[in-house]
Length: 553
Image (cartoon, rainbow, N blue to C red; front, side, top):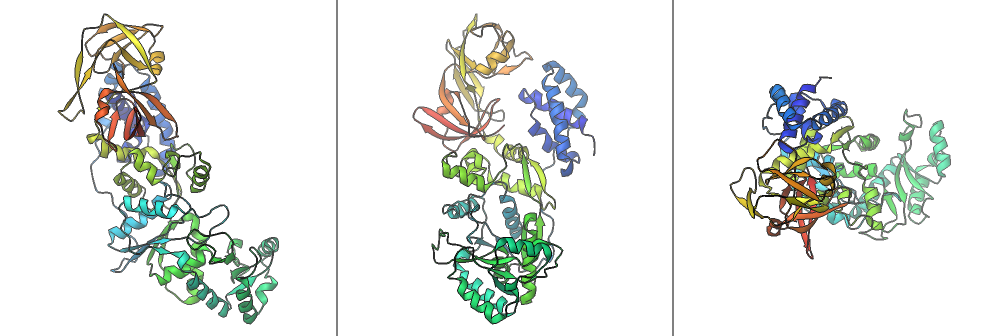
């Protein structure tokens, strides 16, 4: 592994000088320009955190001095179009599919595989079908009625143009029954009444059960009877070698009985196909040429191939890609968990930031272009990988930074009285470093700073950003004016009068405080940057309080 210590130090110093404090998340993406490989991310993150901690403890003058020595290690990234590697068997007629299971909203973790299919369809000007994979599922992974619209909403917002109409597997049960009958007639499937424990034991021993040995006529009779049998009393199984090296591949289930009510078709059907059965049929009938799916579905792919061979159908190109885990996200992202928390009321809805749904990212101010570029950067990873969520934030920051006006926000404000302060009634501050437009900030007898800064800088000299320097007393009630010159010292936010504001954080907590008066003019959906706090999207005005959703730093 290459040692990036000098590069990390250079970027950390520059970042600290620009923003007052170095941020690990802003440094990692820079190192890809220097040859950082994905497999080395975890170890490099530890090195970044170590160096950032050291840099943040330096005095401002030391940071500038050190940066002069190391700045030649920084390079500006060339803007180039992110591209995806070529796929095998490219032709003029290519068809991809999006196959979501409607058990919740699309989230940043599972969106990756769907978006890869969509991006490749766009790359090759191919068709892409949206197929709601709404077979009955399991007790643990149940269908959620609102998921159908949530999924469509997410795909539409991401700009994915799929063929119309949408295809629903719950409308295709009779097709699957027809091919099940064909498999029975070919002596390739049988109806099994054996209990689970016996089946598990037979699989381990490589032993056929008595149900498998019955003739085709008896199997056809059992198949018809299965539609009136009790849940759990029978399954249709495929005949594979009971000596297959993988016990899980031996005589897998193709159909099961379920009495759960389906959100679209109610109780119309009781016998439901498994994923591999339905997709083996649909991938052929729908003309799918290329399938991109996760490594977790490898055995399902092998079963599909087995069924295709029985019918002598051409195999689509199937590419497996590794799953991703997001570094910097506290809990594992899970539709099942989100479903439970939304249902219980712990989460406010499917756009609660803790779901990490596409809807929640949109509401936080994450742009769709950032999400698409994030997926392109990951690409067709073969192995499961860990990707810093800061990579997504870095891409989004590049898009929103130039249009996000700056404002002051003080968390948990505390008033201090400044002795001997110059009589300044108003100052003008740039609305954005790259814009000529100014905002006016009126100053009265009150200065409010955050409780956190009161404790951190007790008895120390600091600069009130854009205003002047003061020295806080040890009781945090008074401050002495020291200088109007912009000394090389720590800077903090302040307001003289403000508007109540609160910010919803990614962990579901609220940060409350005061925003400067100028925020009264911002519009819903506008993304701003609260200086030294982060980018936020204005969500709504509730009574006399302005509510924002935190995007990232």
